[in-house]
Length: 336
Image: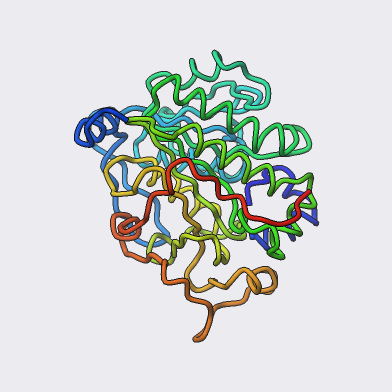
């Protein structure tokens, strides 16, 4: 769950474990591809992406780049040979435990990008010429409340992406975010109403992108986040419907975010999906306890019928469905 600095406290370490148009379609596709970042590079499970030898491509802009997931998005993109702008509140990019070669580091440009405070003009200027944007910012004691960051900050970035004509916005959200009666939602929402802020931010994006030709979004809903090494695409399961979750490493979430930002690997636009390691998958009623205890799935565990698996990014993204245009996904139930 993308609560960045908040995860440093013992209670939020526990929380993380829970994770819990007028233009023709051909013209739209052509415009969306005009700033494709690169072709997807398939890699062995748990390894890093191979550098791309093709000509320079448009950059990816990552907001929340000093956070644990955002930093790994920057790392994954740079290791894949993609120029990346690392946006942080301070304007400097200094994450811990992120290793890059000098050549990879040369692809990273640090920039100021406080999503809770930057003006619309400042955000749009940062995004000019970008091929994609990843929103990995989330509330923290020093960075702002859930309402300021996960909702209003996301809305500000989405509007700036539209103003700057950025083809794709990828949003890091949370599993169970649309299910206010689920145990994971109830517990995590105690932290400043973060789950409500996230789903309200998601739904605002869906509304903003209604009938936006050539521009789209992808909402990624990770399960309980871990600091483990990446296991690669073959270990991951995607689902749609927000009725299933599990555990997943931040490094694998970063890979999903960057790969879904790319316009050449088949990830449909205006889509929302959950992601977790397939062997940790559980229904929402059981996933919280399972994540805390390191549980694995077994025969008879919940099957939604909407799971996606694959050994390549093209395979795992194949068959994902776009959201109903402009339709909110916030569930019914009490919420802070």
